[in-house]
Length: 369
Image 1 (tube, one colour):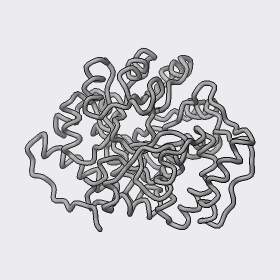
Image 2: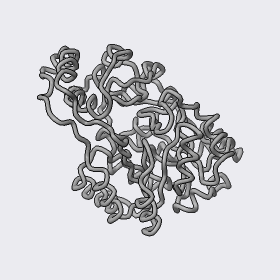
Image 3: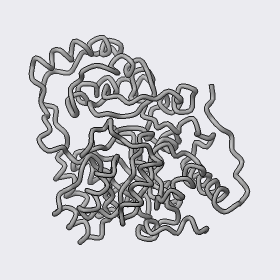
Image 4: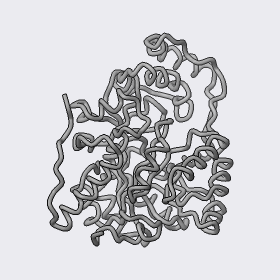
């Protein structure tokens, strides 16, 4: 073990290395991936915002059976006053716009109904009962009562900030650590006080948060190798969170077409879009993203509900042009390691090389054509 591993965050959670696997929403987190990272000495994470409370309870039970090491469960904090239902006129307008895309997968737009998300309070109750080592969350801050109960039960809390204002709010609320979610990161921008378009790049955000806050800062966005990890630690981060590199591993639940896109030349071309869910997120360009890049779309969760059948059919067909190809800007740095444990070991060895002058591990760079 080298000195870079002995950060306060790693010691507090009980990790051998200050490396967090980013949580994936939309049903592509997998118990096998979370457990593999936790068993390797990092903090595996499971994105569970889409799960009903009963499903969440079963999933956390599977995680607790799969690993004896700490892991995190990630939820989305609901936005106060967030509308769930589309009016009939708006529904008809967007159904017409999406109809050609439904026809590409031999489907029709969904029948008009209330577009609801799982009950956040009920999800939290499950976590309080199950007591995972870490409860991480995005898009806001749980109530003071929830945070106090987490402390009482020994559950560490980790929020996400895209701006210094959000990091300060998280610390003031009593959260244990904050993810510095840089502009380069893949997937959804977890902004909650500032517009998602105001997101700060990873480097400046790490420096700002680590200078202003007393709680650990976890760097996220564009980090895929030892150079990225070392840079984040030097800038003041206490740990790093890596999503895209683990999304491309065999243990992730991403469709094969998604993994192939991450390891292809097209991963160089990402964009921020609301096309798939109604919330701003970074993904690899494809036909669907390009078609709706500048469209006026319903907010989350309505847009997410309307596009869900298209995404599900695209996953079954392995159609990369209709999938939400979430990816950070570090995808072009992916190596040939497809096993999550091998990837984790490489990240540790590569960071050792940068920070401790050890021999650099042998690697082959992707992308493949």
